[in-house]
Length: 346
Ligand code: DAH
Image 1 (cartoon, helix red, strand yellow):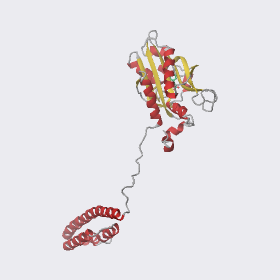
Image 2 (image 1 turned 180 degrees about the vertical axis):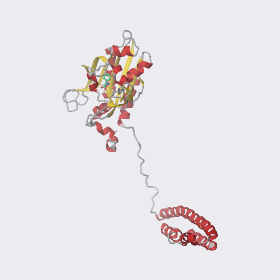
Image 3 (image 1 turned 135 degrees about the vertical axis):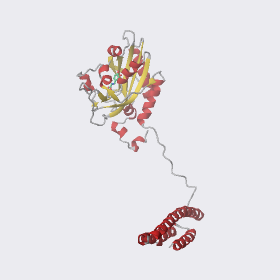
Image 4 (image 1 turned 90 degrees about the horizontal axis):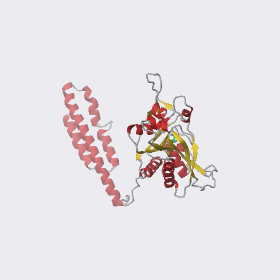
């Protein structure tokens, strides 16, 4: 039996050496390693051999199988090269054909906008700080003058975490805005502070063209001595001009946010119709871009800043909203549905 295996090895090897194309390679594989090959028959017949011979023949036959498989793989490689050489010689393979272009990844439009806005504010002396997306009720609401049962909580549809503290309350949530970082930053620093906070926020919301359950905001605030509403206006005006164009006009109107006093809503004149009225601005000539105000004295006292010494302004804006306005995008869901036809335009 052993000499039979030796004979098989010699025969298989000498045949393999002359194989020069994929078809004869496959034939060789069937002949020497296939189901009906002699080697397979020998391996199958092992069980009927006496124990001593079974051990010897089994070891030799298995060794031969591994050897033939390795030789086959090596020959496969050689055949591939022979084929390529032949194709080039016959002119079938044109190696001068340009390769397929590699598609280069790019930044998501939200990331691009985030960087653009961060650049604008850092150039004005603001620092970028990030904060937790899972937040305590205290930072998201209480410290921002929104106590429990206050109607202002209804302004933010909240996703509560399944967590109950020892008082039986539910103090943990997915932050509904980036404003809680005002508190965290002020608690850990002394004025002057000039910070922007980009990040994800979450709302318990049925999604539609203008609502997503997750989106990005940028919070910003500055606290120091002698900061006035004029600083707020100057800073935000400069921001809007850099983002939406030099000719922009702006408009401030009163608005209510519990953590600022006074609170304002800022609009720029419509950069599509320059104020004449069009679809983008709902025929009003103005586009609201953010909420802002002077940091409420109660908020300052709560973090240990003396409101008689320090004042500050704060603002908050939605990143996707900026993109929708800038590029005339009508559905916020496009940003996170990963349709490359949409994403490739940025
Ligand atoms: N946090 C507010 C929201 O999510 C936005 C906002 C309004 C932030 C006024 C501010 C502000 O800092 O002064 O709707």
